[in-house]
Image (cartoon, one colour):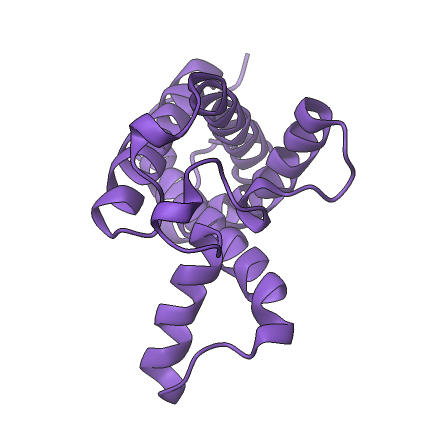
Length: 171
């Protein structure tokens, strides 16, 4: 049986970027299934404990920081939800590109590795970095079920990113 030709790092990064964007949409479907409300994107809803960090979700706060560094002002109120969604998808695309490069350096990238990658993004991104940046409530202010659901969303992201990158780039 002939071996698949490995994609170069640039092609794999582009495939990973597309895969990460698609996997971010898969996370939306996951959240819809978990919450049963179409469009109830968790990053656009105040989380339990958000009273300690303000009412805006983390993605909107991050979008404000980026927007302020470019324009000198906050994202206009009527654009905050869209900016938050954009921040989530851009982060998904960047993480996907990183996965693509990683996968191009390996003989194969298993679905399990993708899920572990998603879990690492959850742990180091959601659970640590957002709290260190003070854009997300402290871990003890968020119910354990929300931590578990967020981990599930990131497992979906990692699996989706790995599977789609493999399909697009042949890695």
